View 1 (tube, helix red, strand yellow):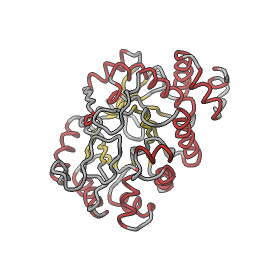
View 2 (cartoon, helix red, strand yellow):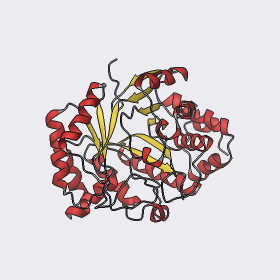
View 3 (cartoon, one colour):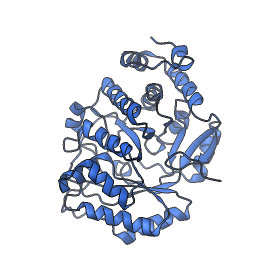
View 4 (tube, one colour):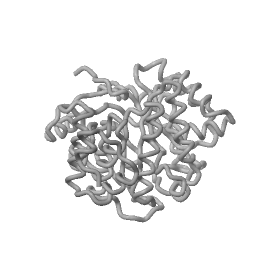
Length: 351
């Protein structure tokens, strides 16, 4: 097994076999110690960052039918919706009033909305509000591409011209097609997800990367996901952060126990060690709760994520943690760090 010194002091890059060995066999606290030491070398040791934003789901109508999703509604369902410009504007005004700097905007794969709908929505927002738009995950981009019968790079170029600032890492789930075929068979492939991100990076756009784990994947699948992200980051350097979160099984079509705190923290730690070219690793208090997220700050995470003024997808699975900005700052301070607000690009916001 690779020693702590190899990884931390010498900056040795983990290979797949060494990563698997560490993930499977390293003592829980030892793994956390390694990840935390790397985090302290890579990011400002005194600070833990957070962002004030709102998750706006512009529509819940979706034709994917992913087994893990409790949020979507099929076309024609009486609970389906598409937000109006006025409704989106009201949510943004509330976000700005709370000191927010960005919105995270995602929705389902709506079969009837053309690309022009999204361009008009972006234009409406940018013409009225000084806010960063972090929107449309890779599966949505691929969906738009197929609906319009145009290349992904054209979709990204048009959305960028309309006002899109960055792309979130949603829809990654596990970047292994044998897993995706069982949990989200109608969503884009692993390579399509990666291709969207690479094209966005080539067009000068920053993005984030995620992983939803704890459903039908094996340990090796999780590692394949991490190594695929590392390879792309080597080529482009366009990812700002990695955000892993545990699958929430309530109200979904996958019956299995929820992941434990220990399993989450082990995954977080191995991600910090494998993703040596990612500056930022984000804790997930939305799915794991504030206490586990606080522990994550000593298992490789340097970012506490979003204030999540609004969150609907995880809440639909029966999990509903809520934290105010004051509570987030208190939790970070109690863990021994100084809280600082950031932007999507991890630039500090003046206090």
